[in-house]
Image 1 (cartoon, one colour):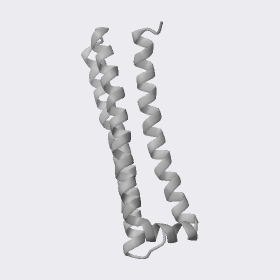
Image 2: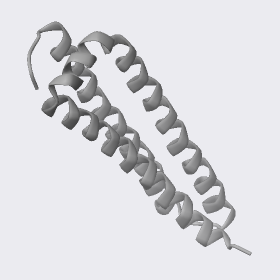
Image 3: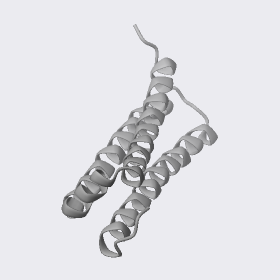
Image 4: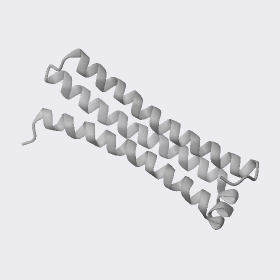
Amino acid sequence: MIGAEELIGKMWDLANYVTGFAIAQIIAFLLALGTSQEFQRRVKKWWKFILVLIVVANFVYIYAVWKCYEVEECLRLATNHSKQVISMSHWMLFNRIFCIVAFNLFGCVLVIQHRWFNRSI
């Protein structure tokens, strides 16, 4: 049987993995956009669809991170963790969400720049 403390750690790790994956995915997309002429041509054609996919993925990742935080917070409250620990967990949620949004917003800006201003990245 898994203990509450171990489950808290697993939720913390899972939230970090989701955040890292979201960032790695947009970086891989931008690297492909910057290095492949064929990929750039396709992005110019499908730019609206790509922006929608980025936004939808953003919401999915944020939802996953939020759910991990909710489970973690419930377990921390049930195991009588200090308010400082719970507060730190709360701030980490916002840091993770900020990282996901910032990187994906940067990706959206580059897609728009690439499409509207016909500039390479």
